[in-house]
Image (tube, rainbow, N blue to C red):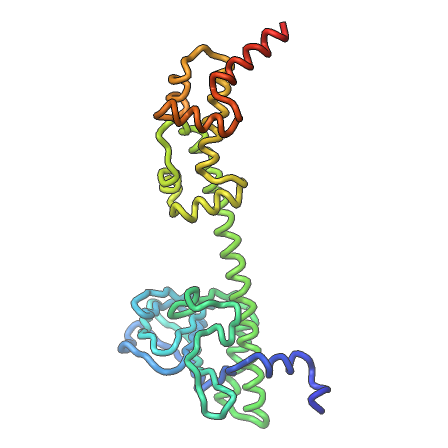
Length: 301
């Protein structure tokens, strides 16, 4: 088959991948609670799949609780140890590296070299996945183990294809988890912003600041301000002022309260600032607004 006849997917794979994943070792283990290990670190990636039982991985100072059908990928040079929590724990371990275009060249580059949508800060020292019993990733891991433990004709070639398939499946699964995580965060943020808006509606007459509202829903000032404007089309500060001016218009039109009292009742500590903001939003002074509304009522009689 000539280069022109190669499937497009293969051509893209060759062109885009600077490093290919290669399994160094694949082993199956069964441990009980009497087993222990010292803190370990090595130059390759380590992928551990829990077939049965429970355990805790201590990875770079973080405890990762593992259950049946869960998987963790530990990055190179990250200190880790494994503690069995159940009576028996069955697991499959794959040690792999990322080989460069030249034979024998290895890379300790970030996981985004084979999972393109993952960013370094998002990955940290490890990746954790909880898989379903019939997940294709589990089947491929088991097939890689079989090929490594019992070499057969074309075994190396098939192992290479299986490793590529494994990381394609991992990419898809991680992408789905990331998208779901973003969706969940967006749903929570949507609820928090509604809470913030309601909080402003109920407390606009107090000395309310952007920081107070952001703190109320446990967001930073800048993130809250940006998210609020994205959702409601207006900044929190402008919204607070808008609510105050709308309430002031209601009081000016329907009560005989002094303008200074109106200003204080809607949250302005200074009548001068109230006058300036009111004129900015309505193009008239509070006094002129009141006079105009009174004249309109007289005209309707």
